[in-house]
Image (tube, rainbow, N blue to C red; front, side):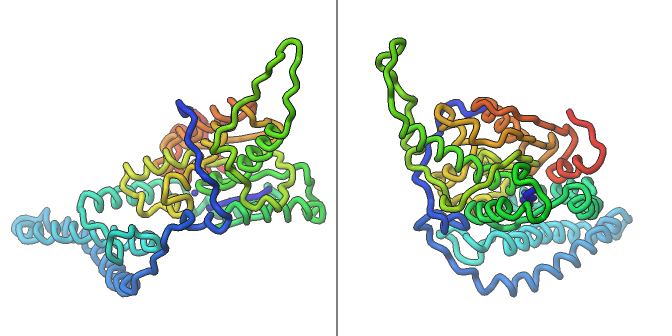
Length: 374
């Protein structure tokens, strides 16, 4: 098993764009300028981190003092000031850690938000994510996964921080050597969680779409008595320009796909993150963008929809399991529903497990602990 760990159907045919080069997969689209990180980032972190920790520890003390008569009159202004400080310090610390690699070109470095509304949205998202992380039993899940990965899952190749080309190389390596480890080359499954699910699906779908397209275009048109003037299925210009990133690397037969809390429609996810105020912190935009054109080429749902008339189901894995949480605040469960609809549209049977009360991490934990589906 390949364990790739990181994090309604379209109403019209999505516009596809020219493919990117393999070296463009990590970071930006071709031609996007890269900016060096500001030298002020580290000094600011040195100042903000201890001050933020001290402020968090002092916050409950000031809250208690405001409840005491007389003292509360003097403590309340300090409490408000501390709350405002924490609002900015927590947000800025997060931005310094996650948003300095590709800041907008029209802002000075370091890239930090000034709007209290934006800061409040970031802090609210961090609080919800932290609560979901703790409530899902993250520590228990980690320990349980280490045991099950060896004793239950069997042979497992774990990949982190890679692109499509790297994943294809790992799959090729696995297919060539799995028998040496006592495995079955016809029983290779890919498990992807979060953004890993997106990259795993993109690797498989991209290969299937391009090879189906090439075979469709090379197939001769033969008139018959029933249809003396046959009209082949049209292939959009976007699908015609699409190609495989790392085509010389051969993919082995994939027996099945398992996706947990995955991102399958890049555009919808970017809009969701923009609404939540975290688009500057998201690794999705850095990996697939920043332009819409580049994002569409990295969007497996758009590729599936655009090639549904020519896609050969035999080129896709026969078994697909999608797992999602109804309480996921990181990736909406509608992404899983959309993917199931698209797979069914090309003739692939999909099993969808939707846990109504589970969060982003809880969806993964549900496969190791007893949890009821919706």
